[in-house]
Amino acid sequence: MDEEINEQALALHKKLKGKISIESKAGNVTPENLPILYTPGVGAVSAYIAEHPEAVNSMTNRANTVAIVTDGTAVLGLGNIGPKAALPVMEGKAILFKTFAGIDAVPICLDTQDAEEIIRTVKAMEPTFGGINLEDIAAPKAFTILARLKNEMQIPVLHDDQQGTAVVVLAGLINSLAVRGLTLAQARIVVNGAGAAGLAIASLLITAGAKQIVVTDSHGAIYKGREGMNEEKERIAKVTNMVCSLGLDKEGCVSGGLTEALAGAHVFVGVSKGGVLTAEMIRTMAERPIIFALANPVPEIFPDEAHAGGAYIVATGRSDFPNQLNNVLAFPGIFRGAIDNGVRLITDEMLIRAARAIAGAVEAPDAEHIVPSVFDTTLVKRVADAIR
Image (cartoon, rainbow, N blue to C red; front, side, top):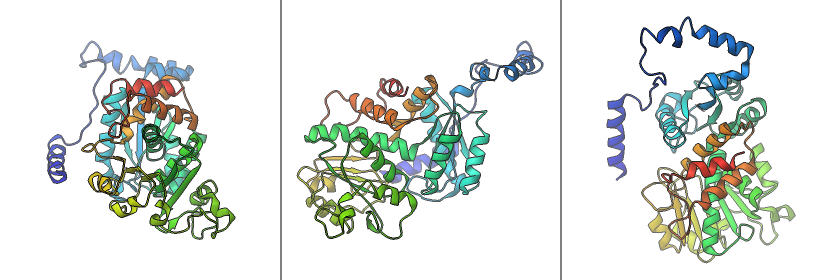
């Protein structure tokens, strides 16, 4: 199936020579409208905006245009493949913005991996765009870039791999736990993967009310005082796996690997790499465990194997299985709401409301229906209404 899709994708992209284009809102250019659309008439518009800078949002397309910015260092499951190879993904994201939210999005693939240079470049683009969607930028610099741009720009900035993923996971978990019969505070949750997505998920879940979270990376469970951690991992260690702060020998402290972390857990959230979770590990979890295997294109475990291990609810990032947790459930509505409501700073409280709006779009959740379809026509408005 994947091989067939890959062949079709290669053929289509070669045929189209890219997936996006620019079209005129004014229709065809004619001898009559050319002086109005361009020189000399456009000079009057520019002069007016120079005297009334706020008019740029009502007399140009700026307010409805988002830049999709990447350096190509963390693209899908492919890793650091560079800005040119990232461009097809960014074009695809632009299509989703337009299709679902009516937002014009422009791919910006930067030929630099230096955080300060990325920050300077994005800030310099502010006159052109009404919002910034950071995409596929590797951790830990992704955290620095997002924090700086949120504080230093006057337009909304979202890192979809962090905030968008966290919103969709929270939405799926709200309904999964309701079906399972647990509250967020009661659930023991393991987040496997301590990159941009994993740490953002853990942070948002805690803000939303989760009390028992363990984050694991390639070296095992993260806990306060573990050696060799970067600043972001040290930060998350202060609010997760907290029993370990009393000592590594304390009951409930997880200092081993993923296998040890999963024993007795209710929820697994994977944003790491394919194949790291086994049916045997799931069998050690609490009764009726919830498995979010979100690595793409190969999940941490495939649904049939997860169910064989006793999984009650299984979600992936793929469209060919039930319960697809895809960021397109969130980011079109988040930006639509931010733009329409003049939101400069997208807060965690807004993101939690967005997650609840997504979860609420499912009238009767069950084990195979924990989030709405990405084609739910009410979804963008629901999410946009939460961003205000």
